Image (cartoon, rainbow over all chains, first blue to last red; front, side):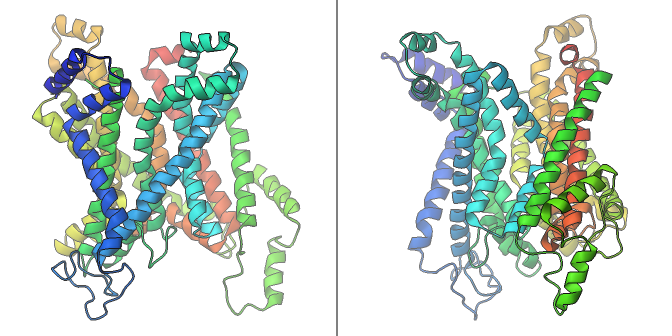
Length: 298
Length: 305
C-alpha cells in the first residue's frame, strides 16, 4: 500500500499544471484499492436499490401464497417469506428506505452541526466556550434512550425519525467544524477578507464554508452508516417502518423470528446491510486519508 | 483532584434536572395514558386509578410533586406493576444488565487489546491486514444480525447452548459474545492506532536502547501511553453497552433493565420511564467521571490542566 501511495505522490509532483485539491484527493483515493472498490460497490448498491424495484417484475408486497418459505432458487432469487413475498424484491425496496434514512438524517445532522460549529468557532471567546459546554453536556446524555422514547411515545412517524436521528448525530459534526473554523479564522486570507470590509456572513459563507467541505465530507461519509445502524436498531425494536414497507433493519427483525425455518430470511438482508456499512466505512477512511494526507495513518 | 470531582458532580445536577424535565413533559404530552390500554375498565375505576396516582391534577402541579419526591430520592410507584416501587423494579432488573455489560466489556477487552497490540507490532504485515479487516467486519456486523446468527449456529444447529434465558453461566456466553465482539473490534482499532503512535516516541527508543526486552518495552512502557485512546473510548462505550443491551436483551429474552424500559415506554408507565431514564443518566455521568479520572492518572499532561 505504501508503494502505491508513493506512486500517487509521484503522479502529483509530475503533473505539469497545478492540480486542484480535488484532483489530488481523487488520485490518492484511487491509489487506495479498498476504498475505490468500496466506492464502486456502494454506487452499485445504490443503483440496485433505486432502479431495481422498478425493473424486476415482482412487487415487494405481492403475496404468492402457494410458495411460502421457498428456499432461494430460480423462481425466487433470495427465496420467499411466510406470506410468499419475494425476498429479493423486499431487500431491494428495504435498501431504498435504509439508504434514504441514512442520507436524509445525515443531511439534517450536517446542517445543524455545521451551522452550530461554524458560529461557535467564528464567534470565539465566551460564546464559544458556552456553546461547546452545551455540546459537552449533550454528549453525556443517553441519546439512544431518548430516540427510542420519542419513537415509542409519538408513533412511527417517518419525518420524526429523520429529525430524531439527525438531532443525535450533529454533535461530533459541530465539534469538527468548530475546530476547523477556529484554525481558519487565523488564516491570512480571512484577515484579507476582513480588511476588505466584507460582512461576517460573506466571510462565513464565501471564505470559511468552502474550506470546511473536506473534513465535513469525510465525517458525513462515516455518519451515514452510523445513522443507518440507528434506524436498524429502531426497526429491530419494532419502532421503525411498518410492514409491508420494510427497511433492512425490519427485514432482519422478521428474519430473526423465522430463521429456524428459513435461515435465508435473515441471511440476505443481513449480508446487504453489513456489506453496505462496511463499504461506507472503508470509503470514509479512504476519503479521510485522501483529503487530509497529514492525518493518514502510518 | 477532589475539586475536579466536586465540580463535575455539581455540573451533573442541572444536567439531571434538564433530563427529568424533558422526559416528564415528553411522556405526558404523548398521546395515550397508563390506564388506556386495559379494556373493560369502567370510567369510574379509571378515574379513581388516575386520582390515586395524582394524574387528575394539572400538569405543573404533577411536575412539582414529582420533582419534590425526586429530591427526597423517591421515584414513585410503578403504574403497571401494581404494588411495586420503581426503585424496587430497577434494583431487581439492573444487576442482570450490569452483569451482561461487564461480561461484554471483559470479552471486548480480551479480544480487542491483544489483536490491536499484535497488529501494531507487526504493522503492514499479513497479521495486521487480517486483524484490521476482521475488526472492520466486527464493527459492521450489527449485534442484531450477529446475535440471531450465533443462536442459529450454536443452539439450533449444534445444540450446544440455550437460545434464550439467563439462568446458568452458559446462557451468558452468547449474549456477552454478541455485544462484546463489536466493542472488541473497535478497541482493536483504537489500540493499534494508539500503540503505533506511542511506539514511535523517543522514550520507547530509549527503553529499547538500554536493552529492555521487547516484551518489557510493550508491557511496561508502550502500553500505558498506547491505551489512552482506549480509555477515552470507554466512556462512550459504557453508554453504548447500556443502549446495546436493549437489543441483546430482546434477542435473548434476558430480564434486564433495557427490556423493562422499552416495555414501560410502550405501556406509558410514566414513573417507570422517568425512573429508568434518570437512572441511566446518573450511571453514564458517573462512568464518564470514572473514565476521566483513569485518563488523568494515565496521562500526566491532562492532569496538569
